[in-house]
Image (tube, rainbow, N blue to C red):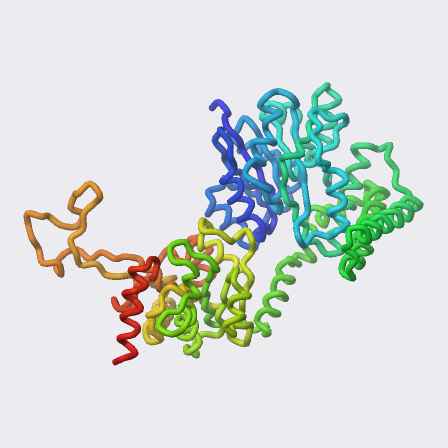
Length: 546
């Protein structure tokens, strides 16, 4: 098969935090070539694989004892069908929808044989790391550049060039620079594209910072044996970089306690790692290779999972797993009805109707409100409490075109529960009794394994037609009574009940074995326009009169 298009190759190990944003941004890229995504995973346990399946990635698995950074990239390239091979880290996110087009432009026009782009830190990145990014990734293009420096957290080459050189599978890091060094020695060219930008997120503890610089320093000795890093270099670089960072903080008015502490911490572990890696003996490397390739593991246990559980415990204010958590997503703006969620509906804000109903249910342990309108909620007296947790919606999850499943996944990743009940603030007529019935049906059927999830529906007994006026569920020549027609059901978005396990299997709030729960017709209005608003409010007012 003739290679064509672009293959984006991603290495992953427990990258669920940023992977949805990365994949979403790849899909949105403005390019005139077909794009496939190839994900090479080395043992994720946090839902990374489920996310990749949800986005239709081609998934390649590599065993832990077979892993190296170069080998995983080679496997990804072998599985690719693209003419252009693009490499991006699983914890990077493109800055805009021009990232991909700009990165491969010099390759398409035969200006160079290998490109790499700019990297910047995120809001929570260490100040020292941001300064490292600024040092190595300037605002000026270098097409071509002199030398072989590059970084494959954001880089690209062609299938032809990869086949000729391939990545070194024995190095503990810097396989990209070793690749480009051989390329440049043969007369090839490397280009830096400053307008192809990604956010690079490193959420590392002290050990992970040290290990990263240690393995890269060891690899650098193999690539450039003439470079030496002595004890005097450790002290000289440490003092110089700390003073430089502190001066920067002072001039940029970022002189905070957190920044000062992080500077000393980051720079110390950066340079102690560099010193150890530069001076380690080859005979010792096999003993510690696994800690280089799997820096998050400790005696077979994943440190990242431990950390995540600690965060969850803080959010719950208790380490005990919740039985039922209600998820109530709420955004500030709405398209058809301005400020809909906070507009007065029969005497109180629309969102209060469902919230009050959920609070009245003693079975529900916690109500999680994922929102970009925390300040507005505060004005109405809705704050964090024992039964309400307000989660600030991440920027990458805001917008009218973000899948609700992504928002739910973010909540589940941070809030543990035996089951989740999800509803909308646009269902003000949904009653306590109906929710209780749904919970009871779900629990009774889950025990014997008949169903794994539940979603609410309207039963339709009516004659339906397609857009081109073809009968859908009846024969006009045989007029059956509507109650004798085949039963059809409409998902009404009132209510969903599911577990974390069912969600991960289907990548959706509706599992693979769902139960269709028919809600009372009078309660099933999901307000989406002014007509539905008026009907629902009339029903609500009538209910209170009676």
